[in-house]
Image 1 (cartoon, rainbow, N blue to C red):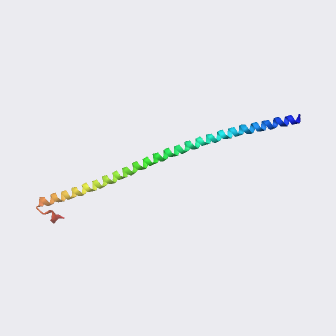
Image 2: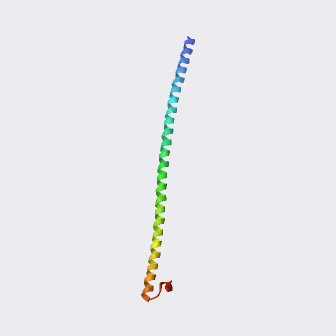
Image 3: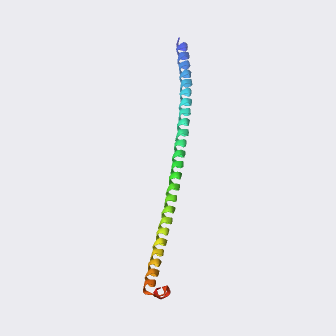
Length: 97
């Protein structure tokens, strides 16, 4: 009977190894899905970051344009006021400048 007990032990060991291999393959496939999900999440965040950067770049360009227009309006107002003051006094604009 010791031989039969040894055979049962070997069969159980082999069955255990097969079950372990099945579990390992399941774990590997689960980790593959997890890795794919993480890659997709990172891609989504990269896409969102790219959109945010573009929005901030456009807003900076619009701000610069508005600042330049404001400076141009101030310069035009100043020139108009100078011209208006020169003609009230009867002087030429070139005499004032």
